Image (cartoon, rainbow, N blue to C red):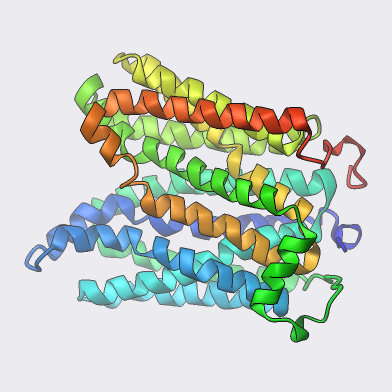
Length: 410
């Protein structure tokens, strides 16, 4: 049962909720610009370049492993203690790297980061779904996705500035997350989730069976696939497009940074529009439009070597992908019963970080065979195929949840 009637847009609560995803956005984006400096510091260690890169990527596989466990904990126990524990782990476990002189111990702190991020990424959408319903939930989900993208852009700028001074100074910034504890304790009440079964009497396997029995499991599996594919699509811009800009377009690293920051801004804009668009369109329709827009963007990027036009393509593709996370989080929350919501939403986080973890490897065979320009065009074709598939869902009315114009939350 939604608690929106009790907690409807209490602004201290809303602001607190929307500050939490900044922590997840800062997790990797803050540290990425410092990787070369970290590698230089530990250059005397074998495989220092790989180890330095792992400081950024180490948390991704941890999130994939931990997120389903977090979903189980959220559904079996209370949500708020899990959230508080994650903030403590994030604030203390990550910032302690400031004092460490071993890259292996620094990597251990990134395990703590992965545990905390997995918890935050599952808990916040679950709480949003608990506190709000209808169009209010959809609007907050949109803001949640926008803040993640915007936080990443800000973190990259901060990390770049700090890297020019001393890379160690990035780690105390993670401790600032502890400032969120007082507002979390004060303004985020424990949701009153109605359960139709006694969760003490069911195990994890039975819960999974219940989710499959009581929910449209084919939609859930398709949504999880879309999350993984969408993250691959987004990370192509972050990982491969910079090489394309340097090799085929001939732009400087500074202009590449501008392009990537602009991509994040485009995602912020589209994510923040989700609530208004959801009033008119079904989830499947929004995703069909989103992947269709991304396909156009990738086609533009691949078919020219003029920077201004490539930048337009980057903005178009990123704007389309910006709709992904708010749409899938809201869709899953809408079709799964409250007592299984944490576990179902944990699947979104798991697939998201799985896509992130495999994104450096999936396009490699295509790039080795066809080159980057053709690979980007092929990816536009993949996006078009997914768009057509979503169009089939739209024609079959697979998304039975209608636009939210008649929602009680409006």
